[in-house]
Length: 370
Image (cartoon, rainbow, N blue to C red; front, side, top):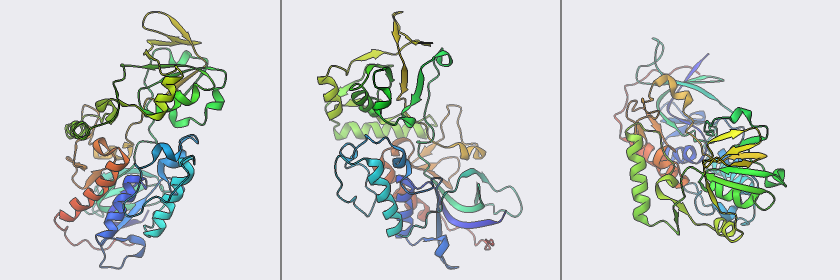
C-alpha cells in the first residue's frame, strides 16, 4: 500500500476536528489535495459518509431549542432555524456548508484502524504512521478528534443476559412511540436521561434510577465551571479516565426537568442491584417489573485506534495536558476530558494548532510518492 505524507493529520470531522481544520487553514496550512511542494499541509479523515458528525444520529425529538447556543463552529454562525426543527436535520447541513465554505476537503468515508510509531527503514522516525482502510499516511502531528458517539457505555449488572425485555442505549434511541404502553426503566443522571424521561413518560410508565441522588442547581456560576474544568484537566493529566462535567457540577434544572416535575415523573429511585427476566431487583429487596431498560449511561472516548502507541495508564486513561499527549507529544487528543463540550472542542482545536506552530521545525523529509 502506498504511503502519503502530510504535516498535520486530523482524525474526525465533528466539532473538534472541523475547528482544528479551520485554525490550520487560517494559519497557512493547505489541504494536501491542493498543496504545492512548499506548502505546509493538512488532511481531515472522517469515518462518516457525510458531514455532521454525531449530530447525524441524534433522535428526532432533540430540537434546536434544546441545543441552541452551544454548537457553533468558529468563523461561521449557525443560520437562524426553527426552534422546533430537529437538530439532526439542521446541524449536519450546517456542517456540510462549513466544510464547503472553507474548502476543508474532508476525505470520507475513511476508517482509521491504527496509529503507530515508525518501525521500518522506509518510515521517517519523526513521523507517526496512520493506517486506514484505504491507504497509509505519514504525519508530523496528529490531532485526534474522534469524539465519543461510537463508544456507548454499558455498565455490567448481574442478570443483564437473563432479561427477556428490550435493552438499549440512548445511542440507539429513536422515539418514545416505540415504548407506548410499556414499563420503561431509565438508567442515568445526565441530560439525556432527564430529556428522555420527560418524553417517554408521556406515553409509558417510567421508573428513573441513578447511582447517586442528583444535586440540582438552578444554574452554573463561572467559578463552578472553572473548578469543574480544572478538576477534569487534573484527571486527564494524571491518566485517569475522564468524568462527565455533570458529575462534577451537578444537574442543572431545565425546561424539560421542570415539565417532568410538574407531571410528577421526575422521581429518582436508587439503582437496582440486579436484573431479572421480567424486571429489576431494588436495594430494599422489592421487585420492579420492566418491559424496557434504557441505558442513559454516557459514552467513552473513541481511542481504540491509538492502542499501538501504548498510551493507556494502569488507570485506563491516557495522560493529556492542554490537549496534548504527555507520552507522545506529536499527538493531540481533543474533545477529551475538559474539552468534551462543543465550546471546549472549539477552543481545543485552536489551541492544538497554536502548539503545533510553536514546535521546532522537523528536519527536511524527502517527499513520499502518493
